[in-house]
Length: 458
Image (cartoon, rainbow, N blue to C red; front, side, top):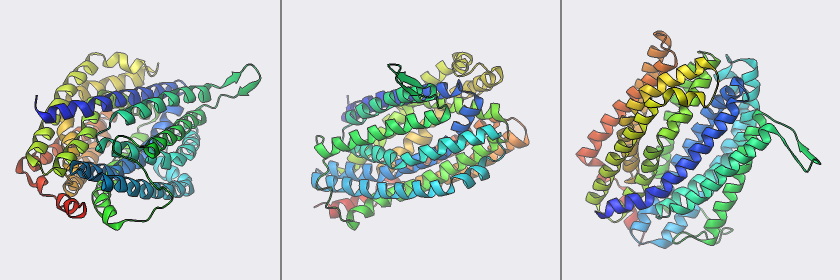
């Protein structure tokens, strides 16, 4: 077996296990919210469409740290890798704090503007859920940056353990806070519904952030945070980190901003469509665990090979990763088609919602085969530092194809939620085609980050 195949399995295995647990816990949370009522699951779905924009933004910032650390590790420059870790963590947490404050101030006008047509009960639940979850943005950032850097250094087991533990706590806390509990009949905690769902997430994220920071302070095999009180901005290190992270973040904002617009379209379709979309997204995330895991691994793997100046091995590794994810998604997608009717009934007893979910899952089971060239392939390109091209293609796919076709099919031709998802599949095909062209012409290998790292990393 070739070396890159061993690297793929070694890094991806723990990531896939982590993604499995994280996704399962998310599905369980959605199920618990669904049994509070359709207004609750609709509100959570609405706000998560906002929260996910920022989570994806922080994830994109983490890409900069992951790539730079991975390339320094590829060059055996441990000192610079550790210093890059500190720079990425401090600056990203500062940015997330600013965003949390801004969202707290703008919470009500944002909800009123985007989702004002929703039912009053849905809106009230949305205010509560958003007000609590936005406070966890800095905690999410600590987790994402730390996990990304550890993976860039070749350690995917530690993020797996921390994430699994954190998500188990999430489910436990969420259940207790939603339904209430009492201790020995003396201390009683009331049932909090949607507020309980938000508090459960907040408690788990707090514990997870503390644990991962302790790990970095104690030190992993390669990465260790030193002299935390003596922090100074290092422009030479921040330049490559944000040279990758900022375009990736802009791409994320543009992409997820487009998804938010699609959510606004869905709100106009009614509460049943909103609930069905939330449920289907949850299931689709589970289906796509192999793809997401290999996309995460591709960033670190390609980054390390590029750090060694081994562009041929980087290309072979990325090609293998895309092919492997395509095979795995074809298998899982086929199973989702077979059990589509039964899957929807796990979340709700509402026949209308179950039918919508089932119809979309049957189409999604086929379309998901094109997901790897649309997302795993560009993850590898980002690992090489080719972020400007992925930014341009993401904008083209989302804003010209997904939004336009989604509106025409879903609203104009009245296909409803199914039309919105068809617009998304069009986006996948367009951007996937553009990424394949980029990969085959080899221009992604010529990114300047490699030479800059060699110059700075003496």
